[in-house]
Amino acid sequence: MDQGTRGELVSRLVEAIGSVSTAHPLRVAVDGPPASGKTTLADELAVALRAQDRVVIRASIDDFLRPRAERYARGRYSAEGCYFDAHDRAALCRVLLDPLGPGGDLRFRHTVHDADTDTPSCAPAATAPADAVLLFDGVFLLRPELVDRWDLRVFVSVSFERTVDRAKDRDAALSGSPADTADAAEIERSWRDRYIPAQQLYFGTARPTDHADVIVYNDQLHRPTWEVRPHSSIRGLRSGPG
Image (cartoon, rainbow, N blue to C red; front, side, top):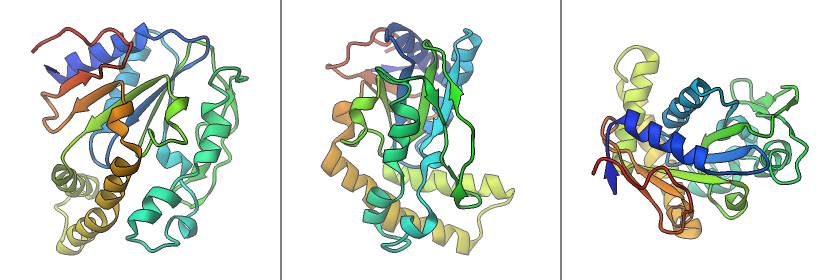
């Protein structure tokens, strides 16, 4: 188990990414609960990799949502609906993960759904170079339908209680003012009734940390702790500040 600054974590993850050799674009999953910091970490990695002249494809599970009526068919606060119905995993494999994987044609799309308008996305296809890196963040990325389609698996771990607090802080930051009572209550209910139970369902059925190559313990944003799982063959993270 190692601990260091965020810069040290990012540098070591970049080293780890560089240590993985594939004949196709490297597909990196950055998984974790909502508000764990996985999107921020993926963005930080993208900046560092681009500084090394790597071609980076950034995408998120939020770009592969199913239509709102399907996402909430079991109810707005249904944990089962969150886990089973929220994302179009077949489209994710068809338009992004498989084209960038072994035997793929490198023609990909990074989104299929516009969450703001709740309509299909018309983003054109692009062609990736074989040495590109896909940095993909989201929830439930290490479930059985997806786990074998990643070349490197990072799981960002945070206590569920901490994610509730961060969600409230994030809402306040986006609105530019402290969350009012109604907004805070809505966030609290969404986390307690939908998001946290969905994560518990995920942990109970898919055991994501068993499949991760790296687990980042992100409760302390500026002093994260990380570990390389024993089954992982990656290099670049095994020595560092302790």
